[in-house]
Length: 300
Image 1 (cartoon, rainbow, N blue to C red):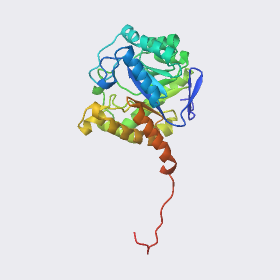
Image 2 (image 1 turned 30 degrees about the vertical axis):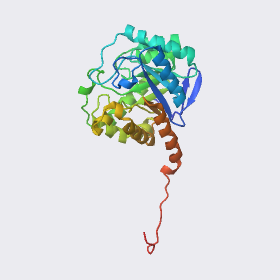
Image 3 (image 1 turned 90 degrees about the vertical axis):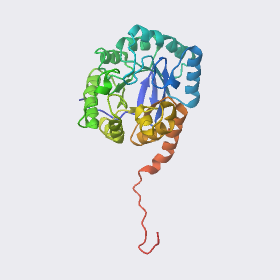
């Protein structure tokens, strides 16, 4: 694999976005069947309300998706239907929110091409890591847009039957090393890594991977995105619903930030932005090699 330098910026439509400080990516679902009902958007008014909220609460990127990837229950959507759902939202974003970078959540190269060439989308977010469309790598390399490379086995309908790992962190690492090399060989420079929490992983495997995120960042030296928001790995151990999982989400965001996450992909922008602010406040003090020394005669 070609040598990889640590990356702290992304090129988005000719502008540089710094990742020296972690950022928030706000989820915009134009789907009728997202696992979190509170994130579903129906109609232009609801879409405009959601986008206003993202801007007001501090999202650096809007992530627009038209194909639900919820485990085991996502309906198949044709490329034509996916593009039909996306076009009005892309048009609104281009016309009324021109300064908000847009990521399009799709595993189809023709959808990616449409979004970038016709509406100026800035990022392609591929849950399959190129595994569901052999043209995706060549397409994003030709378009020269940042590419979110996610780890998943199978597809949204079958992924939860593919959870057999000897060492989940090592296998995710190997997966990324191979695919980063392929993308770099094609001339793509801006690659973001998403470990794929909740995709082809058990709850225990998700937590094992979360505990070792810093291994990925230290070895791969590419920006790391985490999508933990209101997922099963949070609400199942807590015995609650996705609607009740915000507190758990925020706690795991703090753990991910401490282990090197640079982008939080979230339903709830303000709590994530606040977590980043407080993490940045605490960060200078978190790893100081300072120890308190007490006299043997001093009472504790």
